[in-house]
Length: 132
Image (cartoon, helix red, strand yellow):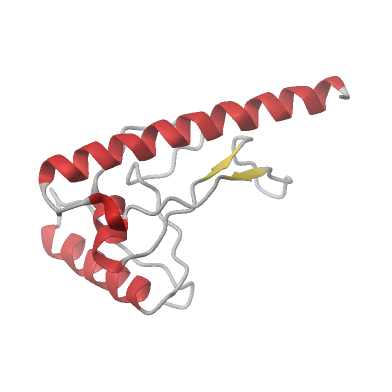
């Protein structure tokens, strides 16, 4: 609580905790809070992107909150400077009804945008290394 972390848990091992976390995240977003989420459901310390879950898109549709995709370019190392690339806001609100097909389609859209952001960031990082 002191770190302001919403623990979602794993829906297979603890479905009640997963629902509580989703409800808490939804309330925060409805109150116009800024909430950082991992669409893969976990942090990948090696820089890779895992498969996306539809929960982030569901939260966006239910709350009306925009998604600001971001990607950390360097693998995490304690006390080392990180480079974060932030993309344009994505507004899924006018995307239609809330059903499984819509959630999966929009989740894929988000995943593609994140891959593009990652590629762009890596390109910028490579140019920076070359001194351009």
